[in-house]
Length: 196
Ligand code: IMP
Image (cartoon, rainbow, N blue to C red; front, side, top):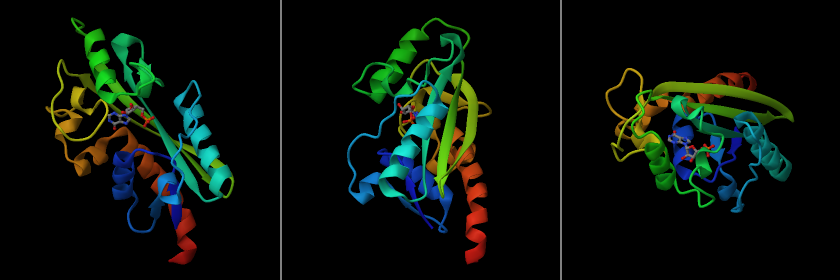
C-alpha cells in the first residue's frame, strides 16, 4: 500500500520506513515533487499533525499521515513543547534549540522530560490520531552522534546513555514516534487483510 508521510525530514522518514515494514511503500512529499514547507500553525501537537495531514491529503488524495513531536521539560513547564522545532528562533536550528534548553536547565535539579508524538492519519477521508510518549531526563551536556534534534541531551528512563547513543533500531523500540507508529501500523492492518 502506498502511504505518504507528510515530512521533509529524511531522518524521520528512515525511522518510520524501518517501522512500517514491507507491506507499505512510504513516500514523502519530496518523492512526489513537492519541496515547499507544509503549514504547521497549530497550538497543540494534535492540531499540527492534523493540519499537515489534511494539507497533503488535499494535495495528493492518497492515504497519508503526519507526525508532530514535542519535547516537554517539566522544570520549563512543558516547554519547548509544540514549539520544539523553533524554540531558539525561526531558523529552526536543532543545535541552537538544544543549547537553549541546556542553558535554561543550568542549575536545575528537576530534570525530568519526555518526548510526546502525535501521528494523524487520513485514510479514505477519515481522520485518526495515535499518541506515543517516552519519559526520561535531560543530561547536562550533549552525548552521542546518532539521531537528531534533542537526542543528545535526552536520557530515556531505564538507560544510562542518551537517545543519540542508541542505534536506530533500539531507539525505535522505545521512542515516542516508535510507539505512535506501531499503533498506526496495527490500525493499518485492517486495510491490508483483503489483499493477503
Ligand atoms: P517534529 O514535530 O517532529 O518536526 O519535531 C519538532 C522538534 O522536535 C524538532 O525540532 C525535532 O528536532 C525535535 N524532535 C522530533 N523528534 C525527535 C526525536 O526523535 N529526537 C529528538 N528530537 C526530536
